[in-house]
Image (cartoon, rainbow, N blue to C red; front, side, top):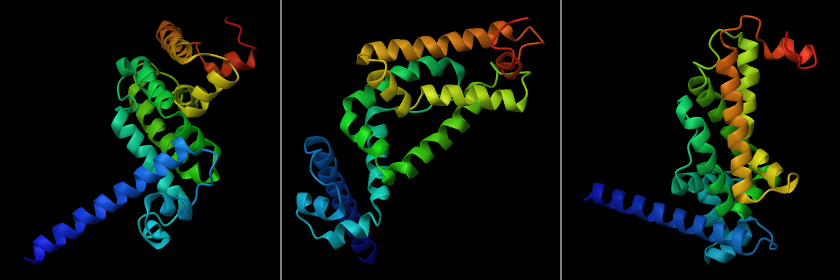
Amino acid sequence: MAVDKASLRQKQATATRDYILSAAFELLVEHPDRPFSHEAVAKAAGVGARTVYRYFPAQSDMYEALWLQVRQHSGTVFPTEEAQIVPSIGVLYRAFDQNEKLIRAVMESPAGARVRARGASEGRASFDRSLRDATQGLSAVERRQIRAVFNGIHSAPFWQMLHDRGGLSASEAIAAASWAAQSLLQTLHRQQSKPQFSPTRKAKKGGRTQ
C-alpha cells in the first residue's frame, strides 16, 4: 500500500510539473509581450507561485525543461557519426523554426545561459566522436577549431544569424548551413592526404594554400 501511495504521489507530481511547463510554454509562445516570471506562469497555470518554485526553483530550470521538451518532441539530437552531421542540421533548424519564440526567448534571456552552456558541452562531445575520421592526423588545437565551427553551425545562434542578418527563409537557412558543413567535410577529407594541411597555418598565411 505504501508503494502504491508513493507511486501515486510521483504520478501527481509529474502531472503537475508537466502542466506548469505547458502553461509556461503557452505564455512564452502565445503571449511574448507579457512578463515571464514564476508569478506569471503560476497565474497562467492557475496554481500558487510556491508550487511553481517547488518544481522550478530558478527561471533557468524552467527554460532548461522547456528546451529539453522541444528536443524530445522534435527528435533533435547532436550527430554521433559523420554521416549524421549534414542531415541533422535540417532536423535541428526545423525544430527551431517550429518553436521560434521559445528558442529566441531562451537565447535572449540571461536565465537561458545554463541551457546554452549545456548544449555547447553536448555538442563538443558529439563532434569529438562524429569528426574523428575527418580530423584524423590533425593536432589537438586544430581539432578543437574544427569542432567549434561545426558546433557553431549546429546552434540556435547560427540559425538566428542566418535568418536575422542573412535574411534567409527557413528552407534557405537549412540549405546554406548544410552546404557549409558539407563543404567543410569535403575539404577535410580532401586535405587529409596532404601533411602540410593546417587550419592554423592557413589562417596565419591569410588563407593561401602552398
